[in-house]
Length: 395
Figure (cartoon, rainbow, N blue to C red):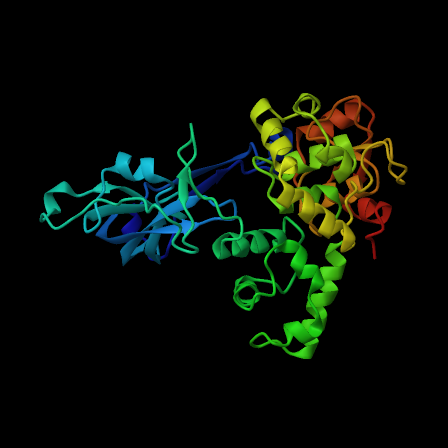
């Protein structure tokens, strides 16, 4: 049936093997089950007007062109903006400001422009020109050699500061509850936060200056900031935004080097021995810690009480030291990433595959081939409740 003829919103259907035993036999990858497959409708495409192209500055200073569109409804929601990634992409698409453009949602989620409707041009359209200066702070915008990116060179640019603060406080980074866009905007505007270290100097009196900030909320926010100090090296590295270092890379670096001090003095030659770290990333890490601003930031964070050591990296004397865990199936009480983080914090390693080095398999619901292999290898198998008791999370 045509998508538009359905009496409800849908982006497709999922085909599943309709037998639990077969599902278990087929198992799943780290990302998805092997016993199910999604089929999606072709994305809905609409025409609308490209009213303008503005420039957004990210936490690393990258200037991203953003299309401002005449609002149009696509797949059940209104689309008014779409990222254009970089200047080269604008040229590749061949779009002009004032064009009628074709828009869709990539994966039924992310708005994207496919190109212009050439027959709709009237002659008043004009090309986008990347500005020479940052729209936020007026500093020079520089095209990075051998890259498509254009960057604002001012590390103190308010837009960069806002984005760095938001990234630092995000759930996957330092996970500081209560600090979202509204609070960050006020902190930057009031001059109370110029970098992430300033967050740990905030007082209740300063927070009470912000709109809709009462004493109870301010005190809770300060408690959350204090709690974040113990997140460990891996989260600090990810939160600091070291170029090309994501969550997995930050965790691997934390495990390999054990402390911020050791990592900061590492050479590119020693860095590339860490799994997943290539030459370019190693050079970026070295350059990051050679910058005076970043070294000063690390020192300020240390003085604020931020834990700069890896949380019970493998080899540490945690209660699960020497054990290697694999998780299979779905846990009902927490995400798999949280469970992995828990055992690593207690000294264990984690793996995505079952091998002879694995000591423990934690089985949630809808387990698959990992369970069978673990049994063949006579690996210890725990159900979810046994696992929770082991890590001190049981009721």
